[in-house]
Image (spheres, rainbow, N blue to C red):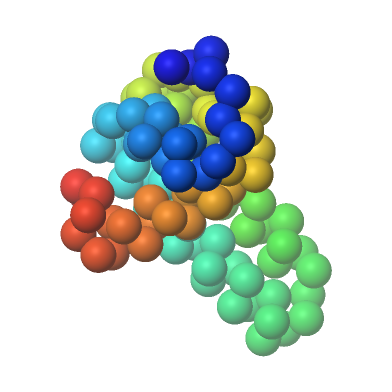
Length: 102
């Protein structure tokens, strides 16, 4: 499945979830995404563009640590950047909704 070319997000998302089967990896994604939201709020509140950099560091830093050290795979971001970005936020919402184990 990892060699498949996805043309629809609906087809990609099950693959995305399979690449996040490790609970620690999912938790790191969740923490990183939450920090991204906090950084974006600070960016809006202060107008300081440094918060944009911090948001990228939080989001990708936590996610990539999860992939490289716990999931032991290569982040889907490298092959499917847009679908992966969408997948991060869909998974984040699904964790809040209880659809994805946290």
